[in-house]
Length: 261
Ligand code: 23J
Ligand code: MN
Image 1 (tube, rainbow, N blue to C red):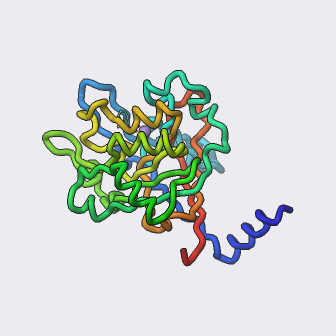
Image 2 (cartoon, helix red, strand yellow):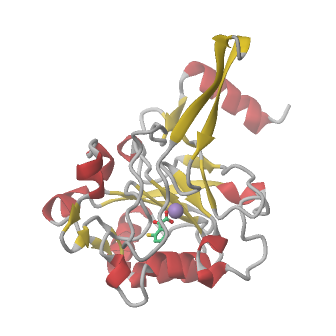
């Protein structure tokens, strides 16, 4: 066996490398994004029992699941946005598996978001992060740590006011820097989507989706436990279901972290 993988196996067994689950529970209580009423909306999760050790199946339990592709902790494929519609390998079933694993760069803006729920990460702030932690490597997952996953009720998590939702995200210049200059795999956030709550009113609307997916990059939404990751050094695995022509998918996002980091 290769030395690297045998070392990894040993480190996992001894606890020197830990698996951190960045995934929220998925069920009927999972909050779903609310778009303006003129647009189509994504349904919440419903589960219906097929059988549960009963006359419909005496020895087995299973459910039928109904949900939108973009529900709970989920993956955004490039085809999700009109800017990515004609790119090669832009759907859940065609993205090469090697593009789903990469180093994590975790940018902590929790204090900024405590002061301002509409906080936007700027390109300038990313460059400041890089002066502390080094340049974001090509093929990274850039994770925006906001503390938002600590909002455990749907009301606090979606944070909808009369003028729409309020939650943090990316300034357009940050998305452009990450997609065009740093060639990241994509970005991950703790909020319901990878754009800020107010981003429907930005120019262009939803600029992070516009830029990331137009560049063939991915999104991860509704992550948690980002406070258990070091700023650099973790490895993130984010593999969507291989849905044919799928625009996105709920998924289990896992991070490998060296303990003590
Ligand atoms: C559709 C329209 C706007 C947004 C979204 C979906 C998402 O956040 C998503 O889940 O991709 S902002
Ligand atoms: Mn999505």
